Image (cartoon, rainbow, N blue to C red; front, top):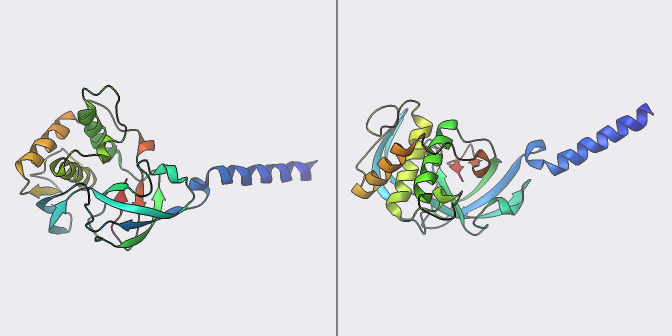
Length: 214
């Protein structure tokens, strides 16, 4: 009986693992970035300072195609595998248009400050809509809105106090007027709408290329 019970428990554990592959084994995906990488969204050229570095960057939402998906259903990419929308979540590595990167999928990789910020973004973008889009933050209406979301994501990750692009560990300058307007609307809404549902966010992690939040 003990042997049968042990066999049953082992079999149950294997089945449970098979039903939760994202926990029991590393989920992964290959992303082929569009060229240009900000296809469909545009960008705003800004100057940024962050811990240990500074750079002139095109702040924007990125776009790519997913393949070689392991450990999660392809439906996790809510706009489809041919339209994977994402933002940079790592300023210490690079990525370029047309590049192919193998990523580990992390379903709990977003910081709480990032979830706070994205909750505000969703709240502002869904204001007045009959049906709210839980992924509104992935669907900016223009280049300036996408740039403001990207800057807020960096601010959420690299600065741990306040929400000011002019001071602190992360700073940004040279924003176009429309980008700054969007940023202020998002910043002022933080805490009003609550965090975004963590289930709506994942990070794509790499040690050799720029990690993403999607």
